[in-house]
Length: 351
Ligand code: CP3
Image 1: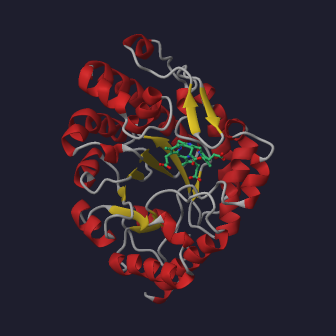
Image 2 (image 1 turned 135 degrees about the vertical axis):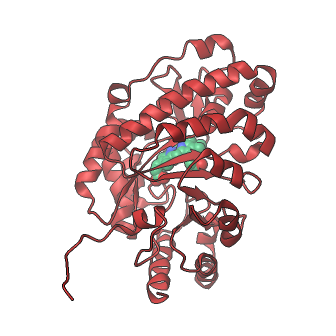
C-alpha cells in the first residue's frame, strides 16, 4: 500500500467538525490564569488590561498552558469585556471583585452615544496577539478566538459589574424592549466584526461565551436573545472555522441555543453529557463537561468522573473534552495536567 504523507488534521478541528480523530481533544476554559504560577509572575507586574493591550504578553500568557498542560487547543488571552472600551465604556478590573464599569448603560442616551468600533485599530493589540501566537503554534494545536455573546456582554454593560439577579438588564428588557433590542443590535455588530477580524488574523475556531444566559426562561431567551445570537452566528457563516456556543445553567435552553447557532455546543456539568448530546442532536459536536470543582477532588474520584464523561461520549466523533465552566483560581496545576493525560490515555487505548 502506498503511503502518502498527508498532514493529519488536528484532533480539536476534527472533533469540532464531527470527524473521527485518533484521540479525544481536550482544552480548558480559563486555561491561562491565576492558578498558574507563571501567569501570576506576569500579573505581579502587569494588570489584566495591560496584558491584553500588549501583544507580546498576551501571546506569552496564551502559550503558557500549551507548554505546561499538553492541551489540544490554545485560547487567546483576552477578555469578553474588551470591546466595550472603544465603545466608550470605562472598564477596570478591581482586584477581588472582578470587572467594574464606571458609566454603565441605563438610559437611551447612553445607547445612542455608543461609538462605532473598527477592530483593526480599536482592538489591534488583540489581533496582533493572534498573529504572534499562530507563529509559535504547531499544526496540531489550533488557536481559538472568542467573544462574549451579545446578551452576556450587555449584562455587564448595563449592570456595571457582576450581578446576581441581572435586575437592571431584565428591567430594560421588560420596560424598554426597543432600547434593549437596539443595544443588542449594536453589540451584535461590534462583536461580529471583532470575531470576523480574529478569524482573518488567524483564529482557527471561535467560541461565543453566553455565560449568564441560564438566568433567562426559554421564552425570554427566544424573545430577547435568540435573534441577536443567531444574527451573530450568521455573520460568521462561510468564514471556514467551527463555532462553539457556550453557556452555563442552560439545561432548559440547550435546543434553543443550538437553534441560534454553533457547530459545537458547550455543556455545563449539571447535565450528563450523553443526555445533552442527544437533545442537541447527533449532527452537532459537544464540548464539556467536567465540574471545575472536580479538579480539587482526590485523584481516584477525579479519574472516575473523567472516565464517566468519556464513557458517555462513547468514542463517537465530535466530543471535545473541557470543563463545564472555567478553571477556578487555586486549582492544582498537576490535577489539570492529570486530566489531559487521562483523556488522552483513555481515548487512545479505547480505539
Ligand atoms: O480562557 C482563557 O484562558 C482565556 C482568557 C479569558 C479571560 N476571560 C481572562 C481573564 C477568557 C476566555 C475570559 C472570558 C470571560 N471574561 C468571561 C466568559 C467566561 C466565563 O468565565 O464565563 C467572562 C464572564 C469574563 C468577565 C470577567 N473577566 C470576569 C467576571 C472576571 C473576574 C472574575 C475572575 O475570574 O477573576 C474577569 C477577569 C479575568 N479575565 C481573569 C482572567 C484570567 C482573572 C483576572 C486576573 O488575572 O486578575
